[in-house]
Amino acid sequence: MFWYHPSVGVSLQLLARLEARRCLKDIEPQLFADDGGPDRGKTELLYHLLCRCVLPEAAGGLEVDVVFVDTDYSLDVFRLASVLDSRLSADGSAGSDDAVLRSCLSRLLVVRCSSSSELLLTLHFLETTLSSRPKAALLLIDSISAFYWSDRSEGGASVAKQEEKLSRCSELLGRLLRDYRITIFATCHPIRRTSSGPPSSSSEADRSHLCRAWQRLVTHRLVCSKQEAEHNPANGDQGSGEQRNRQVFTVHCSSWTGTKGSRVSSFRVTDGGVEFVWTHRPPPGLSVVL
Image 1 (cartoon, rainbow, N blue to C red):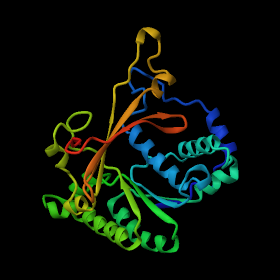
Image 2 (image 1 turned 90 degrees about the vertical axis):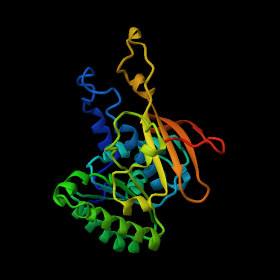
Image 3 (image 1 turned 180 degrees about the vertical axis):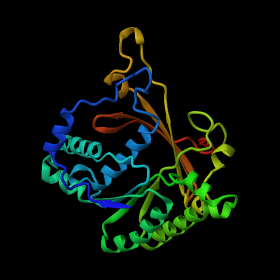
Image 4 (image 1 turned 90 degrees about the horizontal axis):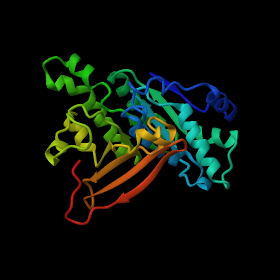
């Protein structure tokens, strides 16, 4: 388990040096996806939420603290800092300098876990953290299902033992929600999905592979899927930066609390982060299949 503040050692000068290093994400377009893989949309959405919270109010942010629990080791602090810098540059009132960027990053606390036992200890420790940081308002977990298979292996034939640690984590999360009124976003790998895109029926959507204690906590579900990008190979644009920027992701959001409803949004990932294309709320009586 490793805690750190990503603001340490991060500066605009450092970002400039990182940008000068050649990126090899296009090392072989015939083997690897142009958009960097299937998780890109999900990860960029987390960056978008994170930036919205830590940015100053003058830049359209909420100026609150965020705790990021990284179980997939997917957090790219330099990508995050680049998106923050882009947002600050786009808003002249907030300015864009080293001090402002560091101030944004100082509102972020990151912890990395390599097992469900470490995740359980982290959630215990978070009670002390939230007590000492009243401005902490958002908890991000990427992902809550990271240790699903290892827990199943350790639990043997007993389903109760397989789900024991995640159930205890869910109980702690429920206590954090109740006692500290924070917001929690957690990603989940679609382990049981057999095809790309949203599930084909509501019954498939309701068939979760995680324990019931976790399912009882969930109030909103967002399913992110990737739309096929339109391109013309004859024009030589396949795999280009412009082509990647045209890649669109669709997010289906459903709510089970208050006024039940759903919403569909689309976004593209740019160098400056998530850029929403459109949002649609289905009319009453029409539900979105997740």
